Image (cartoon, rainbow, N blue to C red):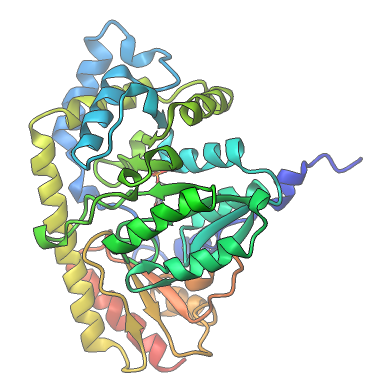
Length: 398
Ligand SMILES: Cc1ncc(COP(=O)(O)O)c(C=O)c1O
């Protein structure tokens, strides 16, 4: 039989997280997981969601159980426009499309913008799911340096210059509390990067799933880059971290021509998102509880971050350093050069019963060996302390 697989399918690779999950399942319930960047179920507004779900199924003449508009539920789209205006992003409904999580947004954007061989510039390290979408589309991924203030504009400029103009396509970055590093891009850099979009005739994906989860008011992130160059930026948001991931609802705010293409791509992918999910989200997010809910999230994750940071300070060998995020779910740990975080992963999971994600998974050329990502979002502070103790023990003898 001939090989039926497409070129695109041949580019697909299993993610490091999936490989690790197998080990984690075998390790059983004692495992303390710093691996998946999942929100804590304790933050889910269960009672209100249950009430809205029942009402949407029972009382709305079946509208919550029906197909809907590809662009998304009208009320939710309008809500997204109003919510964006609080961050000084000007949007009306033609600028918005709801997607099946922001992961689908990344995939749809890749399919409407990237031809094989086109260049995508992204921070190193960067988000695994974005790397997978770009890779599947055949993009040439160009890593751009990141330091403690985010993507380094001079490095980006140099790499844009070194790429033939017809191949420059997209820049991808996570502006706030980045996955995996926890780093946010400083305000002046946001402006410098925005200027380059026109200069080098490229578009930018600003992915912002964690921007609301700042640990206290003084850590509120600067305004989105989107504000600086609205026509050239596709701004991605999601309800996964601020309400619950099961709703699989995210959104893109972009120039209407881009949104129309995304709508065509989404129609072919899944016709429309789940109307039930979108209607429940609309009810919750437009209720008076939502701002209070966001406040609770911030202090909830702040406690977990503090538990992890304090434990790392207490337990880790002096040769190891880590980032100090002011929001989000993640810490990025740097090991001494030469130490490979993959070499002791099996021991950590199977023997010490603590998991993390290897740094290599977050680099588009698989090169980043002496890092690992710790997520502090999903374990209780007591288990965070115990998990760090276990990890430090493994690190000390590797
Ligand atoms: C940076 C980033 N972008 C996008 C996503 C996808 O989120 P979702 O598809 O649940 O909206 C995630 C999920 O962890 C993420 O960390």
